Amino acid sequence: MKILETSLPGCLLLSQTQYRDQRGYFQELYVQQRYEELGITEALVQDNLSHSTRGVIRGMHFQRQQPQGKLVTVLQGRIYDVMVDIRPNSPTYGQWQGIILSADNPQQLWIPAGFAHGFQALDSTNLVFYKTSSYYNPSDEGVFQPFDPKLNISWPLQDAILSEKDSQAPNADW
Ligand SMILES: Cc1cn([C@H]2C[C@H](O)[C@@H](COP(=O)(O)OP(=O)(O)O[C@H]3O[C@@H](C)C(=O)[C@@H](O)[C@H]3O)O2)c(=O)[nH]c1=O
Image (cartoon, rainbow, N blue to C red):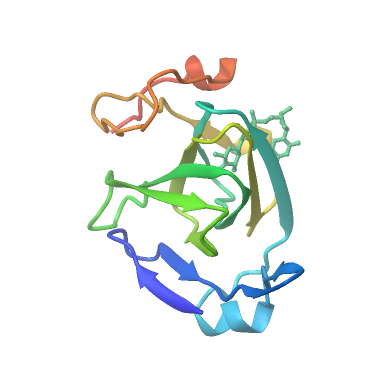
């Protein structure tokens, strides 16, 4: 597995091996020991799958008391994945980075606890699988606007489809 640092300390882009033959391919998605060696020592306690059509934006989401680290894999399609550093003492506090993740390229993104997360779906069918380091707790959830002008995230597609929760979310409070 090759590891690429991102511009936000702690976020890692992981390149995996895909074993291809005449049948198709095989790929390991998570081997606990290997991720522990990278410093991802948290137990990843929940697996999530979302399906999104082209243009959908999900985000920006985080949990306040029980922040979630997320290991994101795209199983089908392509997404523009965005993480925002919301760790108050971080030198990159308030900064964001966007990375294309595609099922055609065996890469994963590790976003540690302390980041808000969102993505835009770019293909007609997009399956996003992610493991999280703490359980979903709706009463602990924080949400802010993906179109917050201070952040000015450059979402690739103009015609965005959002949930009611996300479209009504306030701007980030910094
Ligand atoms: C996230 C989540 C949602 N749900 C339920 C709540 C709701 O009825 C339905 C849809 O929830 P949401 O609209 O919040 O789903 P979604 O917008 O896909 O939320 C996700 O967005 C991405 C960007 C993330 O990073 C995730 O952590 C999560 O916040 O699924 C769970 O039961 N468990 C979960 O872990």
